[in-house]
Image (tube, rainbow, N blue to C red; front, side):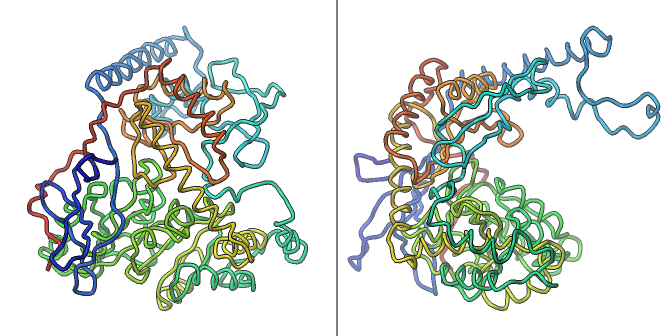
Length: 552
């Protein structure tokens, strides 16, 4: 957010531009008066992109009413459980059979309390089935419930032309068939729908090799390997890279696939505060000084796990500082670019391009094809020896089925579109249109007085709702206005930070965005959602930043 004095609010702190003695313009991150400079090849590297992010705190009364709402819901939940136990109210939840009363229970009453008494009341806002391509407009199948959301039945009515603000269709490439997709149809006719084998057996096709070469060229790295499932790309490859005796340093808001992969690896896991580089440095310093617990031996490997764009926060990784720390403490860096590849950077090449950094500075580049490319699957890219190692040791390569040939062709088509290899500049225009739509949508929401999270360049836009009752009312009212939104609450977010998550697309026209913004303005007044006081503040931090230095 611009400051009249020529400074920038970055994570709630003021960032100043200062002239250097050599006449070059410096753009450094300043926190509490301390300048952070990224180190590159022994020299100070000044990156051109300011990390402009916002995490505004909610007013005190909003937090009080939010916790009161959960408290009242909990009290009524216990009351309803009491009525169910005594047969006053019918219990629709799963229960133990009488014959199995003495067995180890399959269903824990306390563990299912939240699902049974709170989630069920607003369950109609999730899992809504659509019956069209997930373009900027889609069709939703209407459904109703006769038993308070325990079951649903379809009415047979289709809600036409709902504005899609929830799908990860960042570049608008997930669309219904047109003539530009003829190559996909041709591949389907030649190869069929599936491979029926793993990559290590008879599942490697020439299309897979073509795709991997194209991904490596697009990312400007030595080699790449593709997988049939994005989630498994993380969860099945991290265990192949680290194991017992290794240390994983993971951002506290990393995706579940990264968390699962870290747990499956058997490595020791330590968590650092979200995008907090001085929290990360403290863990790195302790790891180098003290080594492994009990034995105090040096760690075999130290792997830093981060995301490019965080899907629930809309924030962008502070990559220059993290790379500086990685070099300083001789660690490895693994970046999940599921939401940033294709959507961030001047030509859509992700956060390394966004910050103007060399992709070779990152040890493991991971991404998925499910968002910007309108397909499925994922990739691991980097040095050739890394990729060759994964071809042999990756669980996905050994046990999982190969990527479907038509899916591979869709990704090839999308990459060529982005790289201009189709003889047009339409791919580049899509990236620029996405950036334009993102800035417009975020700016208008801020002007209206909503609290939104994340980086000003992130197409993932979380709008804070806080109260559980408002989460349900917001989603229902927006669908009535033929706008499809995704609402998210606990446990996917902190208990008191329920939100609506908008995904901006290059396929959205200005008229569509204005229609959504007009509806949001009305909903903001109706539900009293305009909590912003335009005072940006950072998330609470554990450590004193004055002790933080990146210089050797």
